[in-house]
Image 1: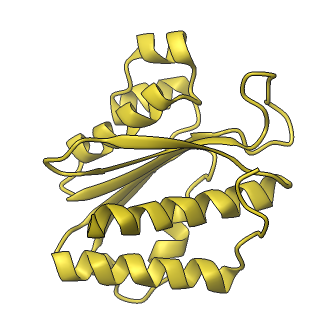
Image 2: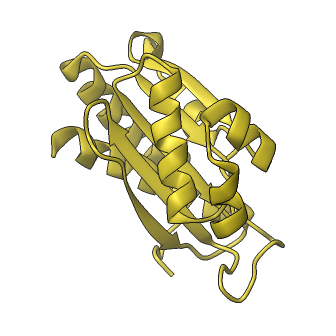
Length: 169
């Protein structure tokens, strides 16, 4: 499992504040494309006063149809690799940037549980993708432990931490 501790609200707020500062410094807008977190990343970010200066949009897509219609994920990708895959999250993050005027995006897709896992993709499997406008999308798989809330909190923390690296890299 990736993380021994589950991030608290305060820890998530600190990560969001770091991202907010980087977005403001770089004069960029951010878009989120979320599946297993159900808008949790957008919530943590928009809890910050003044977030409208750097937060553009958040899209929650659980179904294949929503991923296709709202983010442009190719139906063949979903058929071939499933929603929880590197290919799908890369198409999600790229689609989010293509559809909104943002300069940076983060996307997540995974299995938060308690059901839905398989031997190949157990509960806690999460793909996170990041992309800056004009750059290449990249993704990483995580295997988080704990209950649904713990998996979602760890996902939010990993997404925000990766976004910080994306903005400073």
